[in-house]
Length: 100
Length: 146
Image (cartoon, rainbow over all chains, first blue to last red; front, top):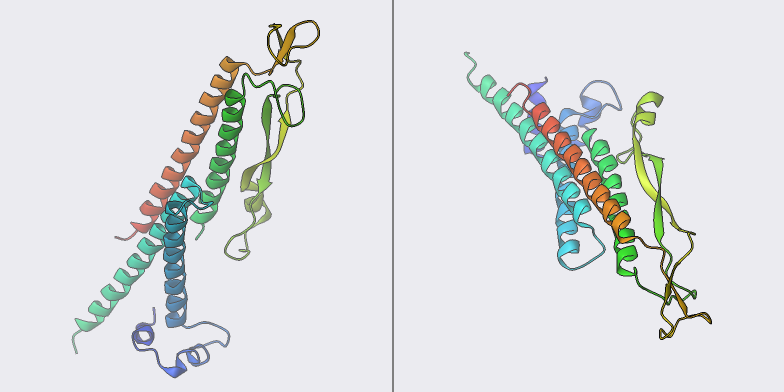
């Protein structure tokens, strides 16, 4: 894993999008970009679950099991995001403890 | 995520079983209905399930054909009427009695509807079990290396 690129999502700079061209092969998304995209997807799923609950509670057309499945999806993706975050923080701390 | 496909399959089955439950509920609710908009007694209805290949939700993955063939959801594609003859009951005082004094009651058998109800309930539970198993597998996968 390229640890140096972890800094990109923490401090989004205007050239974050251009980071793909800077980081190796053209057309290949940088690690930060991938992370950002998956974060956006997790967020989207959370919003979807929120909307499903709202729809169900307000007597809309949503069914009970579809709502539960949407919540389940949101939860699983959130857990995945948390695991990725844990790994990144772990790697960061590993680097921090490095002797110089 | 690949687990969403599994959830979608189970979700389609849950939706289908719910519709089946609605049909059984209609049959039982109308077990003695002698009048319908189409005329005549209520006719027992039944659902037709059809396998439905699952289309990729989050963009087409590069799944092989075998993998795509393995993902078959289910959908209720038709609700058909049972054409069994109606139950004739002798009741000359009934407003819907025919010239001979017989009333045509729906061809709904409460006992077989109840059995269908149990089957639908069990099938629903089985699919919920699949969802729970999917969740457990996903959580086990997230525990890798932890």
